[in-house]
Image: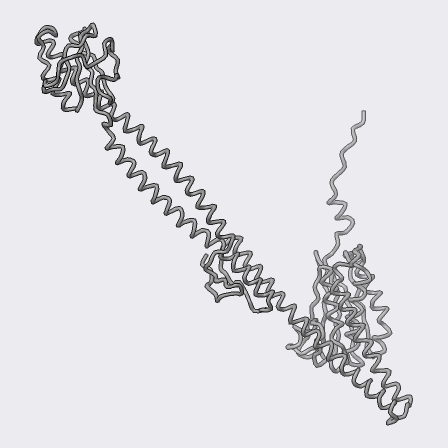
Length: 489
């Protein structure tokens, strides 16, 4: 998901930066990462401390057991505590870094002090401490106890007191490692948060900047970001919308220019003729007035066609859909335009299709589309040509084909015949405004259908209307759920 590093857009934005949303998103990621690392660090330190403390206490207890075994050997050798040599026991205690106190079975201190024997052999323990496994002796550090067992009898106990802070070195090492790991994890989390934030916000920021550029009048501005998922869908939809806006803008300018061009010629001719009559350069003869009247009629036709086009473009909002029979509607449209077709010297044949042929349509709008199509045929065919109107049906569509034997449409003009104000060679020869077929397309599209044009190399044109078929009454009854059976007693 690599954003396209485009040029600086209005507002000083460059595609690699973070906007307010990106800063807030990064701050949220950073807070979550910091809280997670802090919680895990505290848990790791607590676990490491507890583990080290347990390990040290086990070591102390093992040292106390070894000292107790040495004291038991001395007791057996001397057959009592009175003359027992505790030098070996003191050496083991000193090796463990602890102070030793030995007690007899009654809890009275037998000997104490360091292994060197330099210290006073007083009572360094607490009388009555018993034979518990843990205790606090003369020192301030942790201690460990162990019973002295000879044979099956417990003859006394040993008490080791270790210096305060023993094992702190191991804990400090653990703290150092945990702190280093926490710092590394935090840096990695922040780096990933920054990376993800940029990847998430760059398309949004770029789309926003592109929208500002479009609003400022730059119709060529596009986001053009290849991003996966919903962000990619957003940028592609935005670019498609910008393309549609650009096309609509160009169409609006073209429409304004075409309308001005269509109105300018008859207006100029009408104005020139009226000025000649006003200034006395021409006599107001019937022929002259008829020519001016024709120009006025042409203006009226252009304005009327433009009004029809505007109505057709908003037809989707004003359709009154009912179920109509397309075969009957087509026959009515042919009958209405029959006089116009015969006046143009055309022979009309009607090939009826299946009856009924139901479609969901606005009867008036669909009648208007069929009438425009027939009028266009009458205008562009030659006297003596034949027009055939055929109604067809497929499994899902209802079709009306209007086929003529006229001069046809050049192949390079076929893609444009339904464009508004398009006037090809045939339209210019017939005096059309280039609006009638655009009205047909708008009306048929509003009904969910399509209209196409085809023409052979030797002439002849076929216009085809396609509309979705409405379900037949039998199909609707079959689709309706069966009624619950009545239960009678």
